[in-house]
Image (cartoon, rainbow, N blue to C red; front, side, top):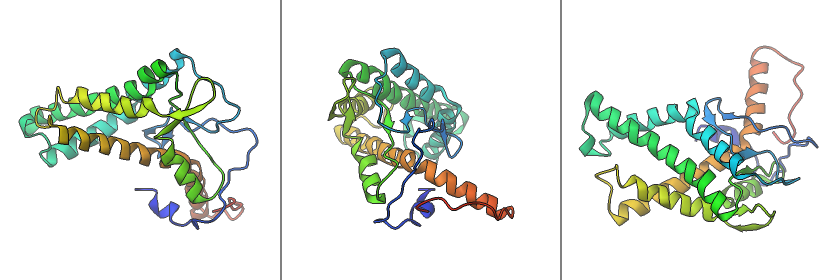
Length: 232
């Protein structure tokens, strides 16, 4: 929720737009370290991805230094809370937490961004709305968890996201000895989907947040020539 103070400065009924006619490529990282290879700045004009391109996106997200950093942080938090007592403590315990945390990220990326999108002929990208009210953009960001674009430029239920995350959770039970019940699996799936909703919101609003942060940084340096950004 690091972006909440910036997002809260918007009026929820206000039009927020990014006006360029030719969309610029999406930033490859959010907050300069969270991988963002999966984002497309616009749905139109639509061009489907080849299977090779889908696996390339998944590989970039999986092996980016930002993903490693997220795994390091996730492993530290899990060890502090004794999430998996069987892993133990100390350096050896942390190594187990880190290995499983990173495996979770890689398997989830590969399932939701490559394997199932190829099987179901679906597009794994997040397509930014970029214009409209804050509510409409939030709705679009959350909705893309359950609906997606197909390779034939149609909209259908996001089987890749739901089944991909479910498969990743099922696989993770093999190396999470303290989380093997059905209740644990359902809870973990809910967490994964919730994280993906939050990630989509970040992807939607990151260009706006980045511009605002950049503008405030320039103001802090005494740049009085900065022009206001529409809607902020």
